[in-house]
Length: 497
Image (cartoon, rainbow, N blue to C red; front, top):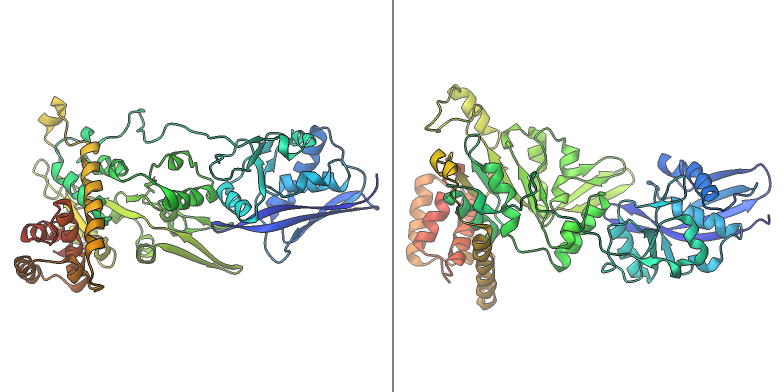
């Protein structure tokens, strides 16, 4: 067979961005073989065996020629298995088994199985965004979680043999869906399932309305985890730019995006044994961590004092900047992480400090050391702290229901709408948070008295003012009133004591 050359467009992931890559193939005489150059990693080099088997299984031939594959630009490291499909297409074009028209205005991404079938790879959303910018048709696995809404010209391919009919004969990507928002038994989560926790629910409404960080403190079995897992049900659905950003991060991490595409906010609950890299991101290749997977949703840290000091300290910068920046030899990787922090903790190592039904067996020194683990800079970034008492057994046994998610979601939506209306009427550009809260004279006097009595620091005063403003929005008060301040201080008192 005659020698030849061909090129096919594909892409490589770098953080949450897909960067253009060109697969160049040249065939020549000499010892038969297949070489890959252009800074490939081990997964890319292993494509030689996958491509050979896939070509034979799909009815194509690999001629006895020396095949050289270059992944340009060569200065950028290439990783992953998404180069399998574009390499196979380029080889078939260079050996005249496929027409050059197949690759015209197309961007190929996919992993090949040995039988010639095309498997999905992580990052399809990033690839679709790149294809949109370049005006190309994305050709990827038919099993991709992408829907046609991401890219009108996206096409799904099941086997390599389908390319004999051309790209236009491939079916557009469809919508994949599955049930989410369910607990382990398959029941939809709702706050009405949580009995005798109306005070904690009120705190959750305040936190959700103002996007405040929240810490729940209480004995084991009080319902802290149940409360946290239901918080996404009272948040407004993901839409527009927020949904696109969350789906992009999950796609790059290889996580499902079907629930996000329906507007469900992410909820991430990493175990306290998680490493710093697993929490904020890292590895090789560099992948987003739990804080980025919680982007536009909830990051729940259960048993907060059990997390390592390094992991908790690593949260400080993401909480402030809403972005994680990971520096490596080959550059800087940036991942968004605009999440709402919700945490839970026991009051002491045994968990029964202050529990009227059980006696605490912890020495005072151990209690102080345990509580100190969540003190300092991290607690200063948590606005709402609430005690969660053990529910009354009689109410649980009787099967009583409390306030449901629908009612709580209505309160949150109304408060956010009122806040938007209030801000639209405000003419002052003052950036001081206490001034922005717009306290009445009586509320300001009450705030000064309580702050002095509790010895609140500057950062605590600012955060109490923000919570008071949220409570006023829930009550649709244009100005913060004394009752709003008192409730806000009550939601901060444990953190300041």
